[in-house]
Amino acid sequence: MQTLTLAQAQQILQAALARSKEKGFKPMGVAVLDAAGNLKAFASEDGASMFRFDIARAKAWGAVGMGVSSRVLGQRAKDNPNFFVSLAATAEGKFLPQTGAVVIKDAAGNLLGAVGASGGTGDEDEEICVAGVQAAGLASG
Image (cartoon, rainbow, N blue to C red; front, top):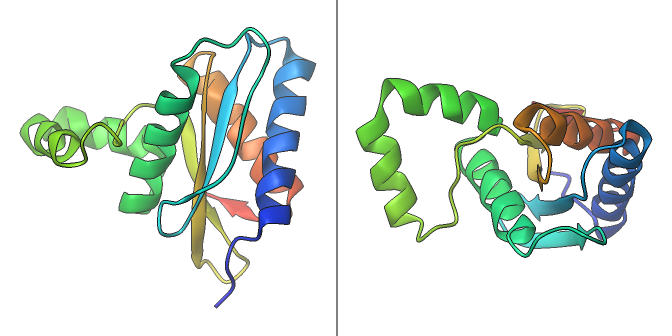
């Protein structure tokens, strides 16, 4: 089984930030996690607030833990709020079901990790994450 390499994580990070800059988004924080939820790479652009790391990581951590994008988790949270409040409490603040993170998969569909962003709207955050994953030649979901 393939694992997410540091080189891939850095490529995802750099491509995500490049897309953000290209689009003129506000300063971003981007976190790339491996399949076990461990931080592989993180960057915070100049001018990004101190909350960017925690939010980006929590979006990615939830996505990798549940195996789906944080957009899907946000939709699920609307249908089952008690479960998601309990899950967030159990995760000690590391779980945020808000749009802005996608899972990272290899060509065979194996889960390699997740990337989350914070700084723009949820749609903007998600857009740069997808761009990063695609630039690394991997699949997002």
